[in-house]
Image: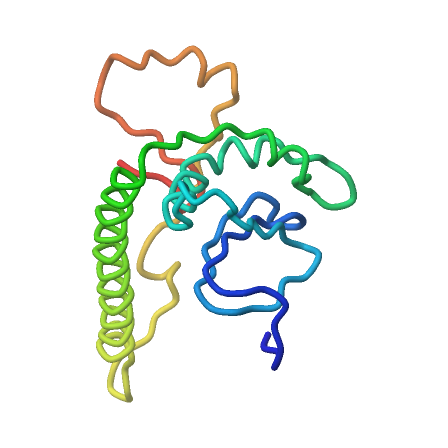
Length: 178
């Protein structure tokens, strides 16, 4: 949401403390920080905010592994304070940030392009696969035979040889690759 006041200056890193605990973000504008995030206030002049952001992104799996379980997942201040980060000289940090920011820009452009292509695909599907009068509609069962095959149990799957043949096992979901 939006609020007309702020309690935190710009150019800060936040780490979600609860819920999506461990999520790392770099906030570039002034914002209102609630109690569900840790705000990192850098006091060391030999540490660039953007560099620390990239380091913490890389460390996100470690940060997430430190979550405490309870009613909601949470990351504690004490678990963050003991994280060890590499601290190269400022010119090295600046070069790292320059390279990673450029790659981030490219990644954003690719994501935007992919989003636009998906929108284009959906628009074409809607246009090409929407039919007016004059097109015959048939029940699926009248034009093809639907088969449902036996599920392989865990023991059978374990016994399959993985180095023989080129027959793919397809799971009963869309989350698979051939």
